[in-house]
Image (cartoon, rainbow, N blue to C red; front, side):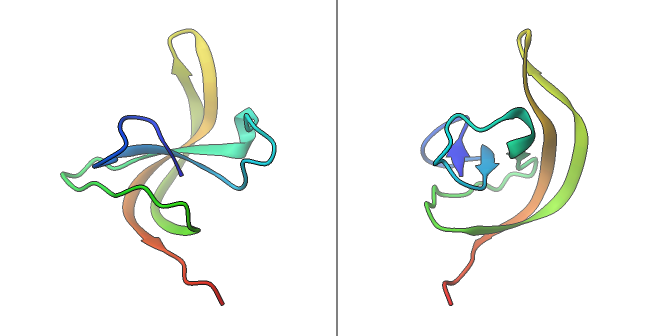
Amino acid sequence: MVPLDQADNINSFTVVDSLEKYPPGIRENIVARIITDQCVRYSPERLRITGTLHVRPLHDEEYLISVYDMTVDSVREVQAR
């Protein structure tokens, strides 16, 4: 989880598999947005995110930042086994 809007009360973030190769490529991240009145706290742990995945170009000004975005229904931490 990499927050896009703020450090607390996050409602927009990028999901990446690993930050070992930074920055992640266009097809290696998902921009996740919570559109309800809810928000989440930052978590460095693995997350289970459910919602609707969209495949479409996402731009920030003139730059292509992702081809995947998600409308988030729920976020929860995944317990280590």
